Image (cartoon, rainbow, N blue to C red; front, side, top):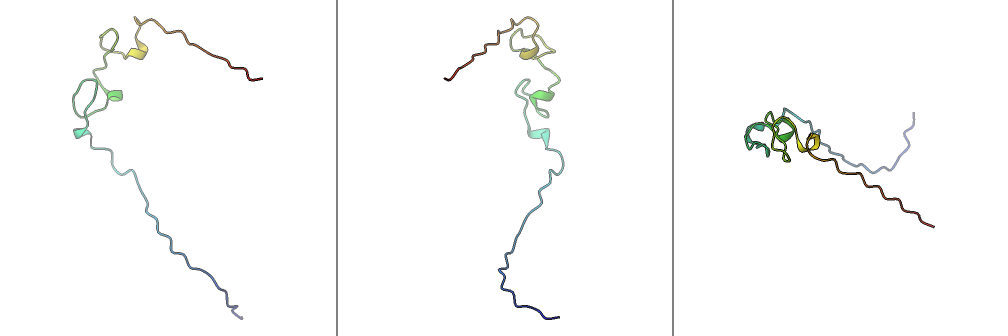
Length: 78
């Protein structure tokens, strides 16, 4: 077989595989709810409401907080 002379540009490509690896070291992470180390606020075992100050739920799920009406605005462009 004949080999045709082909002009080509050679491009070197480098890539690095990035893995999540092991879980994050939580011993230096401080929870902003209870100020203890080792977990974050979404996983805090001592959840407390910022509205009624009772433990066990967060302000979004507070039974004593009055619900805010959802305001919806409509715009018409002519």
